[in-house]
Length: 426
Image 1 (cartoon, rainbow, N blue to C red):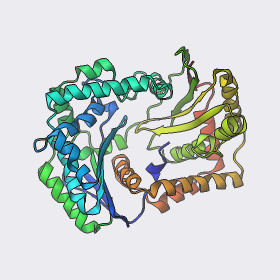
Image 2: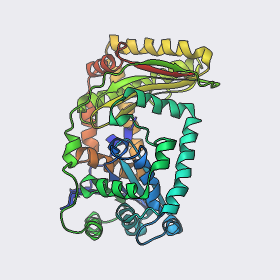
Image 3: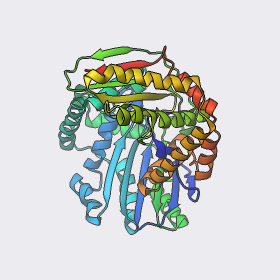
Image 4: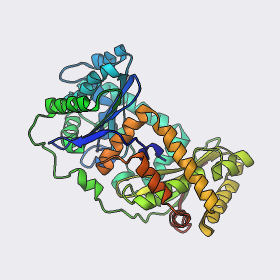
């Protein structure tokens, strides 16, 4: 569950350049500066390309630009004591950096250079294919990771979200230099980008620096983006999947792994989404007092960990309860999960319990969002998803507005036992 996506501070500057790139600058009190370039293209945008290309682009944009070699890029921020990193999701690629605040302009320029000037040298592509294929194998060797990917693949069958982020061994081997160039040219366009910065700097000055850098790397003219604009995904029609399955696969593992879940509200179903966040936090959030953590782990000692995760996409969402346990405990774990869900379905939370749950959620959000990097990444996600950033007060008001009946309704809707899917590895 991405709690930090709901949290950031109110005092900041945000806007949009003439060519559509969005940006946000927030002043902090730290000597460390954070910047991120978020691009609205991920695994779901790979139609016409080999599976896994978004993730492979994320790996290989660091392997050389028109100005710098891979070795220079790798050491550029390291020599300043900074860090350069990136990640890929089903809907985004994010490149981000952490440096001392005085080095922030260098980091910002490097992020834009990577996104606009990557050359994808053939020798580096071949080397990186080995790295990514090894990453795929490591996931396959980790049942708790592999089972979730398999669950999503089965649940979203026939939908662009079904593809694995890493791709497959065969698809990665087939990715070419020309394909990488084409993917970046088509997808890395200003209308699909958001630049976010958190640092102890003058916001107005930093805004000017951002605009100068955008002009330097993209020019002043209109972009060559396809008709899809930032509004398209924001106004996308909800997708209501109907896939349901119960499957057990013999993996000859020491431990049994299980996922139970189904479809959930999208990013843009605001009230339902927030009620679902609250529900998942109550049922299987990170705190030891969440229902499933308490009953399965603390009280009975049947599992090391259990989680109720909620992933939100632009047109749908997924809620999944995941656990690993001794095979002899699997049936009683599943029975207990169903029993606890039924309690939430049959009676609304008491006023006292609802108030405590909201307080806990807001505390988790505040603590998570107190980290500068978390704030920076959250700001980028907010800009791409909503074209704005929800402030602290607005977030609290939205959470306060959720009723016990809202939570109960989500428990009944999401955990409808006639629609839930289940995947088990034994």
